[in-house]
Length: 218
Image 1: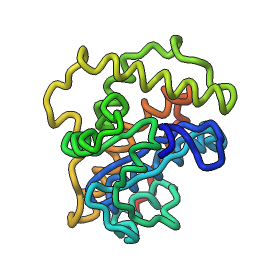
Image 2 (image 1 turned 180 degrees about the horizontal axis):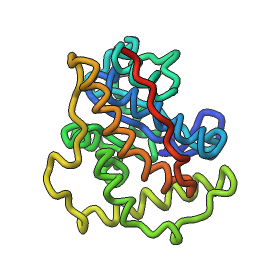
Image 3 (image 1 turned 90 degrees about the horizontal axis):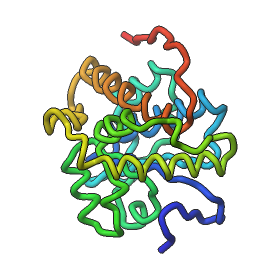
């Protein structure tokens, strides 16, 4: 199997893998909001590959309808999504794994492949990167610089993990909205987007644009 960060074309990339349970709600929302944020700040995301999978992934399934609606309300692209079951090769290739919950994190780490140092819950990673001085990270002025910045950020977060603890275990988790009504999905979308903003800022060195009013579909 290829080493973490390797690609089939030999291009130097940094792979981010979002993991939830079914890969039809939380991880698809997180994947597509990450891609959207990177595109808005960089005009694309050369060097960064963003994917998702589920520990009990609904292989080949479409995104849950409410999840797709939440993405549409943010102006993010839900088209073409297909659910995936988490496989060893996904973990091997990922440079950074961001999970919805601590249980997902534990399941990824239990698969081996030296995944422990590069696997976090999304909110855990957010909490850690907030404590990292951006001036210590490489500039992201080229695709190679962006990849190096992402690698440095991931290593720095891993080094801080034992020192910066969450106020409560639940503080590092994104609840599962599967089967819930659309208002709850919207609250989970806000939760995810709020956690992603500091991560994308740290990855790119580019702050978010002023937020636009969200268009709510009734």
